[in-house]
Every structure is written in C-alpha cells, then in structure tokens.
Amino acid sequence: MTRIDLQQFCSKDATRFYIMKPWSRGPFTYATNGHICVRVDAVGGDEERSEAPNADVVLSRHPDPHFAPLRVKLPDTPRKTCEICSGTGIWFDHPTKGIHETCKNCDGEKTLEIMQSVLIGGVPFASKCINQIAALPGAEFPVNPLPVEKDYRKQLPTPFRFTGGIGALMPMRSEGDVHLGDLGGYRVTM
Image (tube, one colour):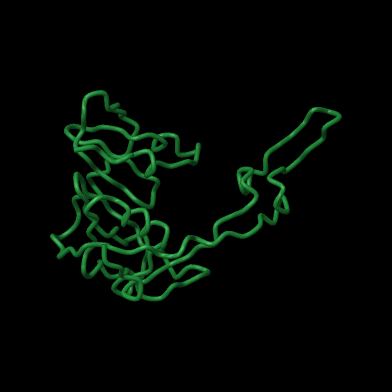
C-alpha cells in the first residue's frame, strides 16, 4: 500500500515552522496545518521532532462515531484580487535601487481565497478541507459530526478516516463568506 502525500496537510506558514513538515512520534507519523490533522503508520526515515505538537491529544478524544463514505466534489474555493497589491503580487518595487518586495498579504499570488463553507450535520466546515479529505483513498466522515460548542475554544475537531490512517478536521466558527448549504446536496457516486 502506498502512503498518502503528507506534505499536503502541513502548514505553509513559516511562523508555524514546527508543523511545516510531517513528524513521527512512536509508531505513527503526523501532519497538520492547524485545520486538518492526519495520522498514518510510521515508516523508516520519518523524522521525530520533539517540538512538534502531540497530535494524539486531538485524535484520541472522540467517541467511536458511525462513518459513511465521503464521496463529494464541492465547487473550487473562489478567489478575489488582493487589495494590498491590486493583483500585481508586488508590495514594493523600486527597480533603480534594486529593491523588490513580494506582497506579504497574498505571498505574491495576486489573489486571495474567499472563505467558502458547507454544512455537515448543522456544523460549518471549510469546503476546501472537505474536498481535500474526500480525495483521500476510502475517505469516510461521521454521519453526525460533533455539535458546535458556543465557546469555540472548547470545540473538538471532527474525526475522519481513510485507507491507511485517521484524521481530524476543525469546524469553522461560522459560515464562510460564500456558503454552499448542506453537504447532502453535493453527494456524488463513485
């Protein structure tokens, strides 16, 4: 069995350097970007890092939910032109002095994502995260996700599983700027 690409679940934010690469602890290897956390069996060569978070704290706090196959393809996350650089990707450019700075707001990509959500069991989730999980082999999501806590700091992530591993997804605090409605309207057969 081939292991999934764990780098896709790692943070791209350099201030969170400790989760920019997968890490091992004991018999498992983990990856997280702060929204999605995954765990697979460790293989030789996986790096152990003491500064990485203890992801099992998140992954082991769930009751055993009833899972159903997650067979969806939601619309791609919409984007808008970055207001800071006006879509140039450049924050400051002074060619005669040889100074060129990439826009820090969009990281030079010229556009920003518009937060898009979908409801599952009355709980809002980022649609791009649902698409990412649904693309995993044998992806399954709970039939009824955990209810949203009024105090978001007490919110538990929702577990999911896939062939070769398990994971957890943090719900959104509220619906996104673009809301797709209930996931049931997007189910597809595979």
